[in-house]
Length: 332
Image 1 (cartoon, helix red, strand yellow):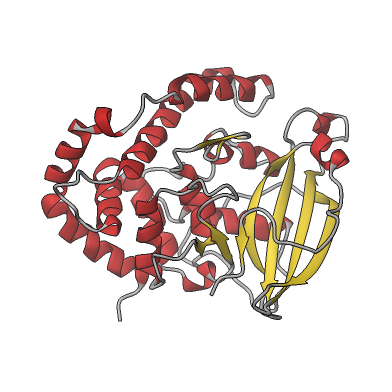
Image 2: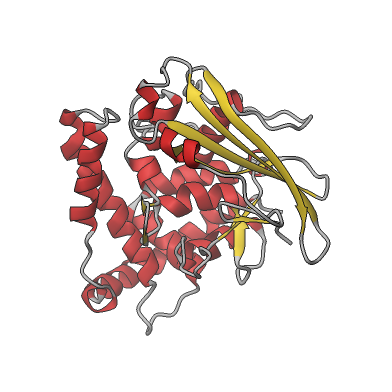
């Protein structure tokens, strides 16, 4: 039986035979399929805010602006889908786009898909928000499902893949900015104290996938409460190290679904130990980590993202029946 990463390689090779035609026809119709992109203006504003907040340096602005534009264009292409006359399956379509337009990102995804133990550290999350707006392009949803052997018609998928690659390539703006900003402007990296363009830039021959990097960092500052261990592959070079962090807040909530599934969710908010409370009060300097256990199963990560000290101070415990948060899903 082929591993997910092996299946992806096979799909990539077969897709490449007709990828040029697909891309040429679809790119020719992008003006008709998509509204004018506001990515350039929105992302430049966000980058300038990142410079002001000290997350990135002024001399990095031009390069990162190009990175933003690359991922926004890739997201729009994936979201548009193939030209109607071509009608390939969406998983093949997504693989083709990544293979032709961003082979380095496809390589990172391939590496992560090869590690079953890594994938098991993450639970399930919805692919749309509470208002029904898609958070992850449907072509990527189907690609992830095809590689994991799950049903592509479900409204949830692998939380780790959704929140890394899926959010990186999400074309939809939200009230809190674009989902990819946590990765492309080093928002999460800054809360962890990891320098550089982590977790995306690892040189010409990356040894670890994006999800591997994120999971290793979370494991060092907010480990899961489970007996089995996981570490990045032995052949990989050392993963980026997060700075020491302190837990400012930890909340555990349990509940049950209408179908009788019992769950326990844990929310942790952490702050870098090298930051004072005053230093951490400027912008989103804290890291929220949300994890979930279903039916007394192992705890798994759902998401991690930056929050502000103001948000934490104003946060109130929910009233009424406990409910899942941050797009978590109980899965099948």
